[in-house]
Every structure is written in C-alpha cells, then in structure tokens.
Amino acid sequence: MNAVLKLELFVGLLVSFTLLGILIWSIKKGGFDDSKRMMDGVFFDSEDDLRDAVNRENKQKALRTKKQEELEKKAKKQE
Image (cartoon, rainbow, N blue to C red; front, side, top):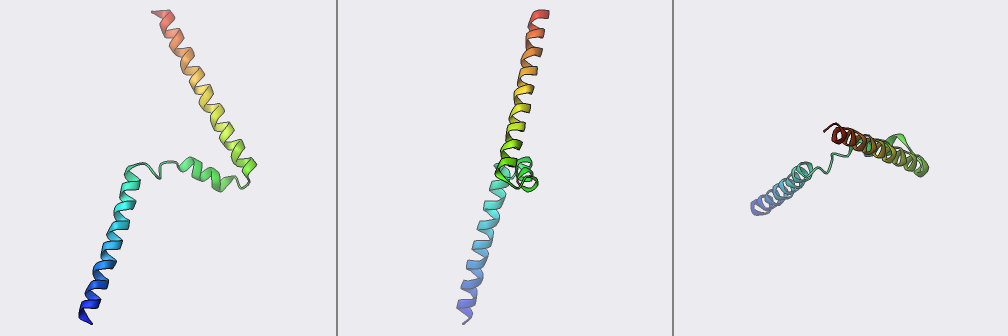
C-alpha cells in the first residue's frame, strides 16, 4: 500500500510540474500577449462585430504605416 501511495505522489508531482513548465514556456513565448484581441472577443459578441473590430484595427495600422512613410519622405527631402 505504501508503494502505491508513493507512485501516485510521484506521478501527480510529475504531471503538475510538467503542466507548470508548459505554462511558463507559453508565457515566455508570448502566448498570452494578445490581450487586445481577447478583450475584443469579450466586448464584441457576434462575428460581424469581431470583423468590424479587426477591420478597424487594420485601418489604424495602415494609417500609422502611411504616416510613417510620409515622415520618412519628409526627412529624405530635408537631407
């Protein structure tokens, strides 16, 4: 009976530490860095709302890129 208890304890600890290692690895790899997209899933219930949110985000990225390109062109002209 004592051997079975030790085996159960060993297997339980092994599984627990394995899961903890996977969690730490995933955090280090950035698996949980996309909080904005996860929060969009909470705030926007339907698929249409999610598509609108993604389109809005893509438009903002495009505007930022365009603005950055314009600034780079101005900097080249001033040289």
